[in-house]
Amino acid sequence: MDSEFFHIALDYINIVFFTFTVVLFLMFCAMGYFSTRNSIHYRNKNSFGDMSKLMASPMAPSMTIIAPAYNEGLTIVENIRSLLSLKYVNYEVMVVNDGSKDDTLEKMIEAYDLEKVSRPMDPNWRSKPIRGIYKSSQKAFSKLTVVDKENGGKSDALNTGMALSTNQYVGCIDVDCLLLPDALLHVVKSFYQHSHKKVIAVGGVIRVANSCKIQGGELEEIRLPKNWLARFQLLEYTRSFILGRMAWGRIDSLLIISGAFGFFDREVALAVGGYDTNTVGEDMEIIFKMRRYMHDKKEPYTVAYIPDPLCWTEVPEDAKILVNQRDRWARGNLETLFKHKEMFLNPKYGRLGMLSYPYWFFYEWLAPLLEFFGFFTLVLFYFLGILNWDFFLAITVAVYTFSVMFSFYAILWDVFSYNQYRRTKDLLLLMFCAIIEPVTFHPIVVWSAVRGNYKKLFKIKSGWGTQVRKGFAKPA
Image 1 (tube, helix red, strand yellow):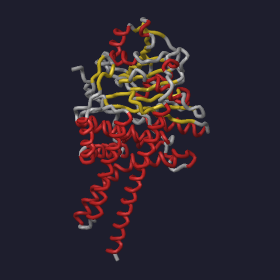
Image 2 (tube, rainbow, N blue to C red; image 1 turned 180 degrees about the vertical axis):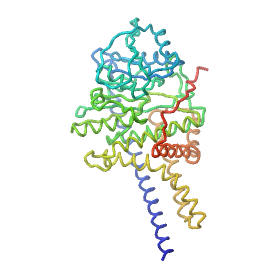
Image 3 (tube, helix red, strand yellow; image 1 turned 90 degrees about the horizontal axis):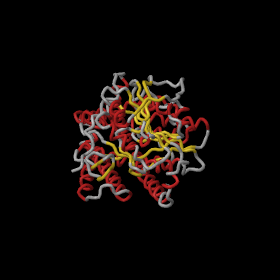
Image 4 (tube, rainbow, N blue to C red; image 1 turned 60 degrees about the horizontal axis):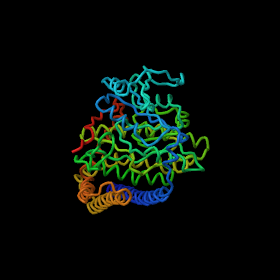
């Protein structure tokens, strides 16, 4: 009787794993389909009409780009120069010096002839104390505002910028990100392309700038990263941004906008209290809040997504820094899911509650844990002599083949749509990365997620971690 029950339990486990795998296959096939449809729709929609003249008008919608800076003395002057060169008239660059301990503030004051000014702010708005607000005495830098405040973290710095801004839209970016000159034109256009819905936020693709040739704050040549970790992340970003988020955008169910490139309707962002300073996943959490806010108000709205390669950033090339980053992402994911658990399978929130939230719960949060503990289960079954080798090999080959083909599709679709990497050698290297990623890079990502969940569930104190950047490639 015990033996029969044992075999029934094993069959049940096999059925669960098989069902989970089939559901993932179908989900990713649907993701590929919807992302392709959305990319084609976006290209057709933007293939006509030149909005550059309209957006260059002083009557264009006003925008503030908020860039938190902490110990960025080595590159802050060049980073600001890049932000001030964007092709848009009615915008402000607000750099929030978040209590830097180096010479970040001094370099900005010297390079841009900054002088202290006064600026009104809601006294009830919670943020760390402001030590000074600066504007340039030179007309050429009139768009620049520098806020010096006590250290409170990235979220607190962004909230301070939102409260001080008086413009209709705010863009929250990393100060060391490179925005292409026409980035704001695409962003503002996205805010105005929906006549029957209020666009509350606009996100976009993040591209990997490691090894690219950048001169004077401008992207001169796109190069494949030389570092293998950066190459794997480039492949991962291509899948995530070009396929994943494009698909969620197609069905209006996008639940995250990257913290490196996110733009918001300031009124709605302030109405929900801005960024949560008690989470390390603030970029995801604010979208949850804004969507819930609009759902509760029963107002038609949407979150727009731009597939154009407008924002370029440096990714970690050191394994320890990468693990710390993904550890933080996992903690932020769990914090946000728990905080908004009322959305789970709640028809009140439509596709968000019935589709998007379950996806983040089962795939983004639960799947890495299942993979990790599933490995030890396989080892245990092997030593107990009860491992079903036929089933194990069949499902492993199927999952591996599907993951590689999905990565191939992401690479080829990126070539078809934007063709950033044109050398045959680069494409072959990316495809090689796709072939070996499941057994090299992916285990690192899984381990990082497990570590992050362990820290959060057992209340082990851990903050943001440090991202040590090497800087963009210098001209040869």
